Length: 116
Image (cartoon, rainbow, N blue to C red):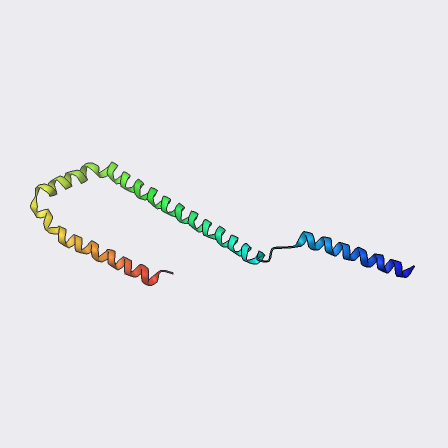
């Protein structure tokens, strides 16, 4: 009698083990596929954050330019027209161009050096 109980117990355990193996079987590349999915989700989140940052910066710039045009538009147009009528205003242009070019190159250098 004891022998039959042990055999039934073994048979039940074997059946349970086979059933649990069938349901719990994972693909051979489960860890790799999971890590790829996590990496894709992280990249998607980074892209969305960058897009939100670009949209925010563009909106702030447009709002600033619009505000300047609204409050100082007439004064800026008057100054521009008087500068175009007087030829002395163009003497400042080469120095201003050099300064802008210098600061643009300096900004690029600093970004490359200190970017993380």
